[in-house]
Length: 507
Image (cartoon, rainbow, N blue to C red):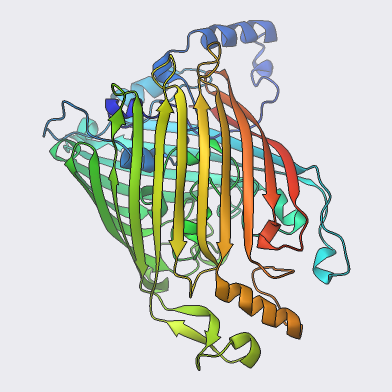
């Protein structure tokens, strides 16, 4: 799944998620700690620029890597499977090289995310405040990725299959201070609380030298659409693994959820693509009762279809050192959804207590951009800006829109060419109908939706971090998160958190 050589100028080759920077795991084998540390330092000193690990790469980012891969300047029409990810690892092993030479790419990693509040939560007489507390949380994910190049294995030209399974653990700190919109740890949730959860499993045929790609199977729609491998340089889930507004409904299959799907992508020019697809909407895709393991392939719960379309321009400026990606997209949901304010007679349902009005379809749109602004010494270094907006159907959505911006500064320090400084913010605007409904419900003492303890209007989440390339296969990222109006409520105290994100590429 690793993109063509031109994309390496845009985003460095790296690995995937993993956890804890604990004790050395080889003590039981009798290998002296000093000798082991020396071998680690030797490996760290031999890191080649092409293999340096950054958080643009983790297990699950491969589809978005391919989306953002322009054709190389010398592209031909010869069909072949795009190269798979080949990240650096903590300890190299001959088995991986042997498998890769035969078209089998097996990756194993873990990501661990810790966040702890350094500010006290809101206190008061509101009954909803009683469970709020100042605390910390840890969440994480171990993941296995299996890519098979059937061209190498069986002579099927241009055909590959991709599969990911994960296991997730822990909880997230934001709910401790009343926020249910944006997780402080992105790896929390969706994994079904099982040892093995299937994320996706699909086949893809690449034709005409990458100018046409067709995929089908169990797919995570939002890994291909409205996606970028840059988003998960951050920990908070308002940004990683995509700006949260794009999965405002439970009808969008985003990692680690998937549905049956079909997608086709064409590249009419070197730096332009257009893609579309059709994804059956499965009821309860984020719910344990239906998709706990991800292996329940039950077509009986299909309730409609999602049809996305996206196009992008991917220029590379400055003597091919300043890549950019400028994409626009939209999608239509055929499944009926309830109005967030009106009843069937066109009056506020919070006042009449009548059944909510039903819309036969709904939609979402997005505009997403990133551009490297400065280039430093290493080919993958530089200052990159990200900005964009997702805008949803205001009559059926919770988040009417989410706007975001971010800066990634990689290799600014000459002595630390693979370290990355990052800053990001997201602003969430709650749909007007939701705010008005909650006003009426509060005035009448009614039950509030969305775990709200006040009227929801708007919220901002900010994050600043510094990703340290510790050694081959390991990244450690101290970070600071700040929530302004948690849960989009003005009556909740702003919250500050300190934490870290660690990633280890095992294989």
